[in-house]
Image (cartoon, rainbow, N blue to C red; front, side, top):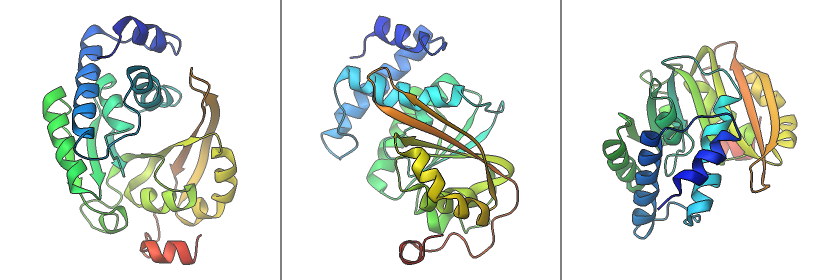
Length: 236
């Protein structure tokens, strides 16, 4: 389905080496994504170039712009069809992956995907604001990540409770990410974070992106995360 030569050149522009074995796993991912998308809504992007750039390249490249520790435990919050963490796992097989989504149909897809392309991912059906309060999940991960789930203030409240002190929240945002960051500064501080990096860049197709890295410097107060209604009514 995907074009190996085109993808190799695409990743080469970002100084990332894509092996033939990694390409085969991503190609199978794309096939499963399109097959399942006919049954459940996973993505609006189903053409091969769109998947290569706007799903795979978009998911992988940001993690090469920051230092991801060897063997890091990562939780992907509101992961949907597995972005960004599943393509990352193909490239960084050392990381340990937990996929969290509120829709069980997507979790069923992710379990099949994990088995088919060898991700060894733990797939959890649940809401972030509930899971982030449980002792088994709270402040247990080196990294939390999310792509296009909510505005950054809310996203910090969903994600930072999962992160160990010293760990990172890595947010993948669109071209308005810098503005979102300015509006989220109080939330970041309240929730125990500190902005470490913000990088604006473009995908090869020209779409604007923003990588935001937030370091967890102190424990998140126990009252967070709140439920969604409270987040909407009284944003941090």
